[in-house]
Image 1 (cartoon, rainbow, N blue to C red):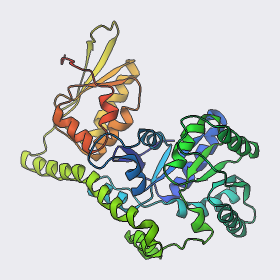
Image 2: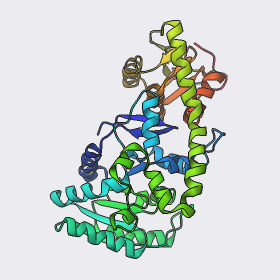
Image 3: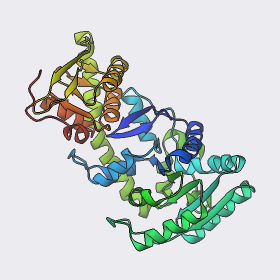
Length: 385
């Protein structure tokens, strides 16, 4: 399944509509026959980002959560601020896809395609009510399990309780596992038990079962589309949500401001300088203390929507003929959001490394919360060929 995504504070977010997300989930189910690896679908909102990152420090607040989100097979934008951020930086996410909005059309599609669902988490009466609603709307839908176990969100390893929960899920052989534990518990729990889950795909849905069960009311459609659902929820539960929305919104603005500022400054600079970029040149040199040749790709001044396709083509070509590839950032002065996405996807590969990253470029990577991926694979004191 080809993935087209953007980057939001170091996390890949897919450029998908709700319809495409559902189709992609069924593609993953079909792939399960060959891979036998349970894949994860995350629904990213501002609260997820606040749980993942610190306000001012570029070091992650929760590195395990960051890795869980980065390794998800699909990440949707469950939050209008994320959609606005992507549009502001020039790589727009087509629409907001929330866990709550995804469940009912997904259940309908499962009923039509003879696929089964397992509901995990939430209060027992809420989960049972949600199950009842889904069955009433889709009489042929197979809901093979509905449990609300107590799960430890802080454990470093698989507990006996985890094993018991997973055994119960595996025995029912669902096609889709809906995890209603909230963030970060649901992502960390999935990461912990992924290797023993015998399910094609798991989807983190936060607390969406309460919406399905009509325990928590949804905002009117116009408020959802305009990004005002948070206001509706705040008015409904002010004591519980005031800290989350007040401090969370300020923190999100604090985290995104550096990337937004740099983006617009670079656009102004490109207008003044004419937006010239260097051409790519693929060179091969003998790496120190290594008998094997390593391909080196010299990157242009600007890694953006105009140069990304060429760079990706050269990277793919180099990896066909070489086991190792080093990207030379010596001439790079700016990377836009599309370029940042290309780099995050590229540095996810084990045989990619970097050299020539200047302090100012590291600050740019830090503004996008992506410096950790590249710094781990950067040669220290590496001389340019």
